Length: 154
Ligand SMILES: CC(C)(COP(=O)(O)OP(=O)(O)OC[C@H]1O[C@@H](n2cnc3c(N)ncnc32)[C@H](O)[C@@H]1OP(=O)(O)O)[C@@H](O)C(=O)NCCC(=O)NCCS
Image (cartoon, rainbow, N blue to C red; front, side, top):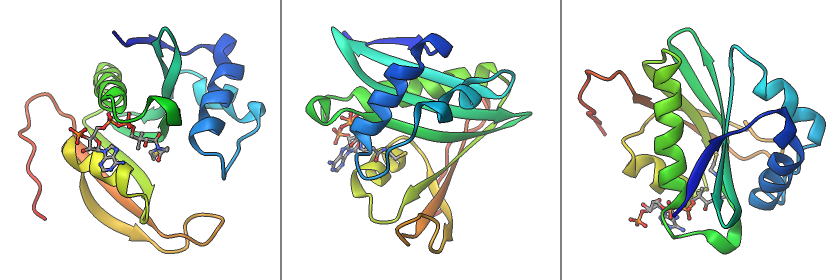
């Protein structure tokens, strides 16, 4: 069974390895991760299935949260791990008081868009040329308020 644990500063090298295995075209330096974990806004999760297989990073500011990154290593994909990680991340964001969760995803990243749609996120905007390679991003949002029903209008 997959285990989800909170990521701490001690996990920075592992987070960097997982991030860069998940996004080989856009490697991040280890120095990028400590600020992303810094309280009170930073949140990180690690997923382990005998070995580390995935991670998620989010930022919570008052009642809004944003997914900074989420990935599963290529050899562990299509086993439902991203769904488990995403649900755990939503729970953490709720615990930190967020009622809305936002993310940007590359317009051409069909697996990720399918994951987020399947988990109740709706496209709410487009950011043209958002990525360094010129790709557009889709802005997606999901209410994570505990009392609200999820409704997507598109
Ligand atoms: C996107 C990503 C996180 C999905 O991880 P995963 O563990 O393979 O996803 P899951 O097995 O949990 O899939 C959950 C749902 O997502 C969707 N999905 C995931 N991969 C898909 C694919 N290749 N094609 C179509 N749908 C896909 C499906 O709806 C799937 O549900 P189903 O298996 O019941 O059909 C993974 O491909 C990845 O790390 N990609 C590179 C990094 C990235 O793009 N991160 C997200 C942007 S922040």
